[in-house]
Length: 155
Image (tube, rainbow, N blue to C red; front, side, top):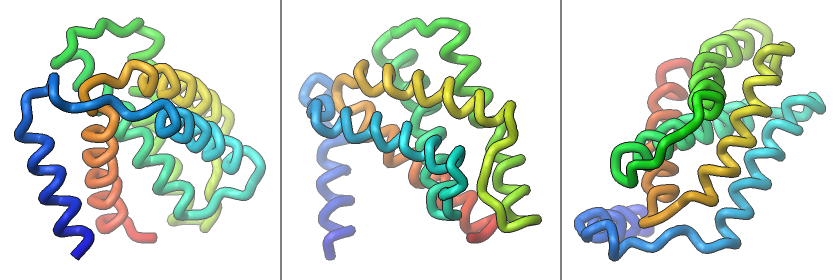
């Protein structure tokens, strides 16, 4: 029942012109930033689980979609470094999930760690740029994409 209600509420919001949609409150943006940095810390400390891996992937998809929405709907221009950081994180998903499938280990090699840290910094900035509910829309999209991969590749 809750899911049906959430989906109906989301459909109503998505049908509104963008200027009626609100940005995420400061508390939610701060929580998102902390959660993103915490995920990277869990990987580096060896405490990351398979669920953490999928949360990290979901966050990466969210970031890429936020970049897309901000660029296409708000005419935001991003630096090459920011674009490269988000793209590099997306490129690491196959290696990280493949390693987990083969070894059961959730972690980064050094290049993946650098990419994850750079992307976490970009994500913090993206959350500050949220306007018109873009972060929420991107989060839903990222969740859907991660679920597709999770169903396809398991755990």
